[in-house]
Amino acid sequence: MEQTFIMIKPDGVQRGLVGEIISRFEKKGFTLAGLKFITVDRPFAEKHYEDLSAKPFFNGLVEYIISGPVVAMVWQGKNVVTTGRKIIGATNPAESAPGTIRGDFAIEIGRNVIHGSDAVESARKEIALWFPDGPVSWRSSLN
Ligand code: CMP
Image (cartoon, rainbow, N blue to C red):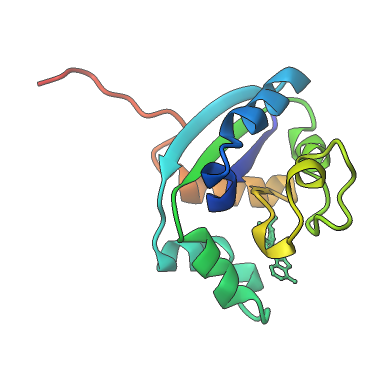
């Protein structure tokens, strides 16, 4: 089954949008396949956004992503990559339609609340980067 990587960025966490965002994906019918609450360091953020390293906003983007904890998730279901991007809305909140996450909750492109993989192949790479031990953590005992 198709999977995508979804990250609630530090502004989404700080603004208390975690429940709202998870709810939108659940209500659509997608399945949560992995979740972690995590603060990443600069090299990790640079790796995640390596395709954008030549962009003038790259350093600011990395600063933003490492500024606080994020919620990293794997969501699963039919066409979840494309449909997930529709639920999220256009990258620039000025262009994202009302009813989408960014359309409803964001104004600035540099504080756009959420990230979603743009293709099946990038989803595969991003899931491998963020969940190197698999999407579900296991713990066998308390000792
Ligand atoms: P995301 O979906 O995480 O993919 C790349 C990110 O780069 C994007 O969301 C924005 O957070 C950021 N971004 C893209 N364009 C700009 C821009 N012009 N200025 C600042 N940040 C940008």
